[in-house]
Length: 117
Image (cartoon, rainbow, N blue to C red; front, top):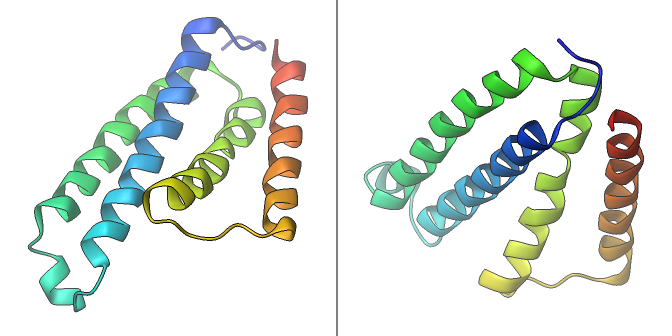
C-alpha cells in the first residue's frame, strides 16, 4: 500500500461517493409515502441495494491501495453530495447553519485530500 493518493484511486473514491449518494436518493424515493413492507418490493429499493453492492466492491478496491486515514475522510464528500441531492431532487431546505456544516465538511475533506497527495 502506498502512502499517497493517486488519480485512479481518487476517481474510484469519487465513484463511491456518487454511488452512495445514488443509493440514498433511491432509498428516500422508495420510502416516500410507503409503509416499510411496501418499500421492500419497490424497484428503487432494489436499485439502491445494487448501488450499495457496487460501492462495496469499489470501496474494497480503494482500501486495498489507499490508507484508511486518507480514504475514509474523503468519503465524507458523500454527506455533501447527499445534502445537495436532497435540495435539488426533493426540494429540501438548507438553512445557513446546515450550509455552514456542509462547507466545514468540504473544507475538512480538502485538508485530508491535500495531505494524501
